[in-house]
Length: 328
Image (cartoon, rainbow, N blue to C red; front, side):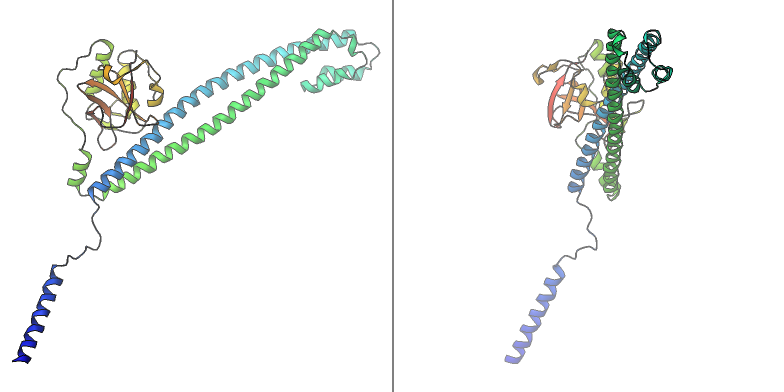
């Protein structure tokens, strides 16, 4: 009997072990991505790409300014070169008229010297230098120095343009890389999960009555009419926008020119407190500023959100709020 009881106990223990083993979950060969982790990472990548895109816009504005400055400097340099050549001709004529006792070869060296510094140096070695009109030579020196300053400034602008052009390329590469990484993460999700992720934190319900008129009304009406359009980095219409592209186009309908940059738009008008917001005001997000939308009243904004959402209506404080500006 004791032997039978031992065998029974052993059998029971074996069955218990088998049952317990059957209850242990078997991990899949490759775990599915956690939807919340993917959502957080995609949102972060979208924002990083938007930051790079807005830096791209800022650099592009700076580049346009530098190119205009460079063109102005080159034109000024040409004018200065012409002034210098005019004085050079006057000095050459004076040399021919006033030199006494100098050899013909010395006079020829002065007249035909191509380099402005060599021209001045040759004059300085001539025995009859003091006989020349001193004021004319002084004018020549001043104009030569002015030309050299302009040449240096032009060269500096060219170097700045080259550096900024490389920065533009770097920012564009970062935008492309962040967007590609986000798309890769989304591709790993099932279609239903992807749809659920990209439709969160936004609303497609449009307000029926926005209390805005005049220029602000025109801007708000245009922006709301774009709800559902795509978000594309660098786009400013007709059917796709980035954040500052949408606000720029919206206020253009009201005859107000805004730069294609959220940080530059932050300086486009007087700042207003959150408690004084009116429909049409531009609202800005993140530090440094990298996103902008248009306030439409009742604590809501319309904005080009990100590639997963497009142009949509969202809450005023759905992102880290920085401040607001009233254009026009």
